[in-house]
Image (cartoon, rainbow, N blue to C red; front, side, top):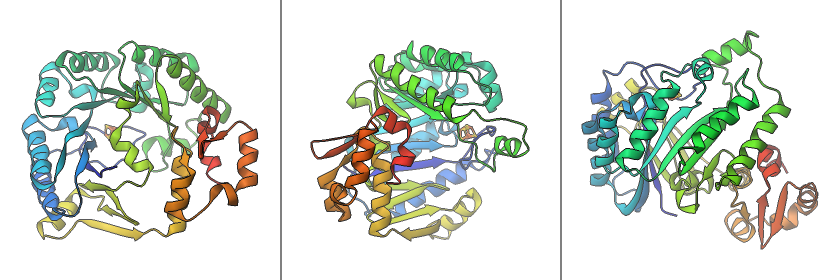
Length: 372
Ligand code: SF4
């Protein structure tokens, strides 16, 4: 697979209570950030072969106006060879997407749009601290459709304290009524440093128990597969192979990717590096003509192998045993035979055609499977 580009847009109008992504709420630095981003692109000129994905994530990329987005996408075209069918994705907040904005996004050449709906339940949205309503989400989806985007994804979150299965299934049914090409259904993770994590630490909220979370996972997978979606990764569903996220798949099989912007991570060969998690430091370094890298690490073959195992158990494509043995010098069938047979008998994996495929139950328990 060709490498991909990720661009982190580190601005949000307000912070959601559960969010651990890097972003700041003051937007006055956006012009200086864009200027630095274009300079950072220049630093990587010629370092990678052709790219076939460009992903604008954040933060809230939809806060940028069309001229700024055009400048960024134009910068990528200027500095990097991009394949003619490059998948260009933008993450959008439903609160930003009126008809005019949707039309302007379409004109920039963006061909995949991922809407952060999270829930259609107002109580849940307010618990999460989202700045948009369920009505905003519905009108954003309609605007995207009326503008002509034919690759729309909806991001949803489940497993929220106080949420019951009925409320979650209602959200899923509402999402399905718009026949999105892609659905991401993330289980809420309570990160310690977030406002939600602090409340949890103080005993003010009680997370859902493991059995209920398992039920959420299984019901989600059953419903979406019965509705024509492929459950191709633990949290991701696509209405056909052509709608699986080309960009995210690179993260799961050690395809190189270049991350630009504050806090963005990159990977190539056996090296991973990441930028400063601070927009000021990022701008400062770039303007001193220094790569704004906070740290880098070289992964050993053993580390790469463990990662490949962990990632392989999270995807429906599973693990290609021949490829695994060639890339990581490790014959899984030979060295883990007993354990693989055991989890296969337990119905967590299927070993077939020189592949290991996780079953639905296996996907639900993928973290434990990778410990074999
Ligand atoms: S809008 Fe997204 S990136 Fe911004 S705070 Fe909320 S979840 Fe985090």
